[in-house]
Amino acid sequence: ISLTLNDLIKSKKIIDKLMKIDEKDPSTLYLTSSYFIKTKDFQKAIEYLNQAYKNIKPNENIRLSFNITNTLSKLYQALGENELANIYTTESIKYKNNLKIFNN
Picture 1 (cartoon, rainbow, N blue to C red):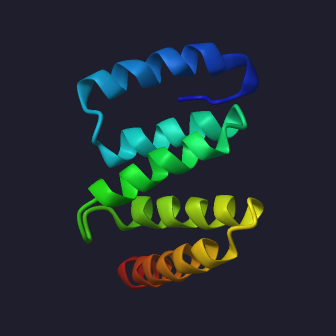
Picture 2: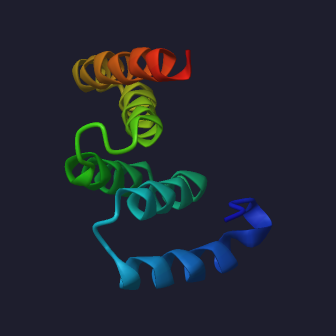
């Protein structure tokens, strides 16, 4: 899905359809958070990212896990929530290290 400013209306419609199919799917939740980041609704983005993080199974999709935790880290840091940012930074580093292992 293209999440450029010109495509936000179309992107929202697609996200809404995906959420109707499976509102607990981590990929859908991550994509939905991207929409809210683009619209600058960071609290809503964090809600969806936290749901995605809770719903992803261990070692199910390491790249997605990295993307979720890395994005949470950046959002919390931007909002001045340094303790939470540090927690998710640590998590994202673990996933990044696992990605390196699997990509070698």
